[in-house]
Amino acid sequence: MRQTSFLTLGQQKKLKCERFLDEMKTVVPWEQLTAIIAPYYKEPDTGRKKKELIIMLKIYFLQQWYGLSDPGMEEAIYDRNSFQKFLEIDLLSYAVPDETTILNFRHLLEEQRLQKKLFKAVNRHLENKNITIKNGTIVDATIIAAPSSTKNEDKKRDEEMSSTKKGNKWHFGMKAHIGVDSKIGIVHTLETTTAKVHDSVVMEELLHGEEEAVFGDKGYANDKEKKQARAKGVFWGILDKAKRNHALSSNQQKRNKKLSSIRAIVEHPFQVIKCQWKYTKVRYKGLLKNSLQLYTLFALYNLFKMRRNLLQMVSA
Image (cartoon, rainbow, N blue to C red; front, side, top):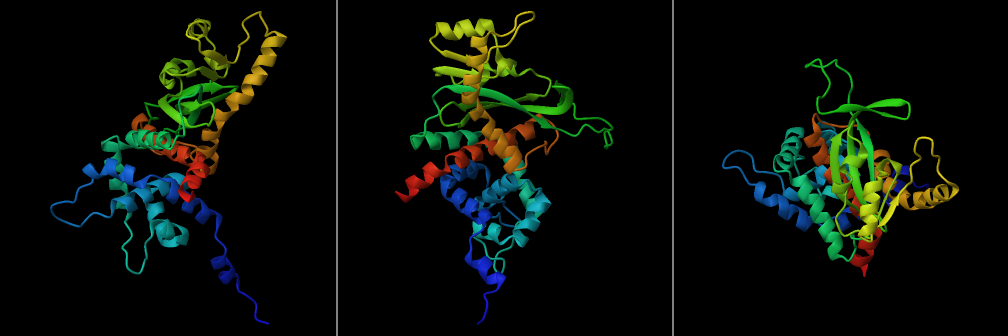
């Protein structure tokens, strides 16, 4: 009896990466996103024609999901069949964009600050699908590491990055501050700062203004803001912080434990972009370019988070 080869079995079984890309290809609102970029993506008067906009946008998103550099992305398209399927191209008849073309497309997005517009468009898309982001807000921040070495051409570290101490360890880089919907975990607001800026400084910017409740860890504790929130009828779900010579009471400890289970939702966006999409350190110099990349990552996270709901709507 003739046995089936491993190659044939591999062709019969859809790989995990293919399932992921199929889902994302379905849930990303390509028409709305390309419409934002199209006015800036014009054909040159002379020289080579530009690649199709939707293919360039798909390549840009692949870079975010798989943490690929521009040359790494070009090579991966040639090497990975799943990428070719996602891009819907045939290498026999299609010229893959080279690393310079990929770089220039990213520069176009950065020059026009389009990543922030893409983030807002994704959230509008979710709202239009009746996926609300106007419930309570959970605030949190994470440190994104940057190279601390001075062994470079300028002989110094990035001046827009800084150091901060967390626990007993020093970290150098920037911070990503997010406001997340307390019920479904959608990121509705993003702010970025250098690492030394305290989390509480940007708390107000993370709120959309229609909250019925605000949650966060004890780093956001503030008695004045607590009174203001309660005066407005907003539930103050910030963890209580012990004060000098005043330990937390048993009731405060129980309250903190209960609130921590709610607050845990805010860790999921960081877990996805850092652990699943391997975004553990800054890719560029300065805050601006890295901030724009974070807008893209969190826009894609929101679609990834709600993909089950969106896929059900498509199949209904």
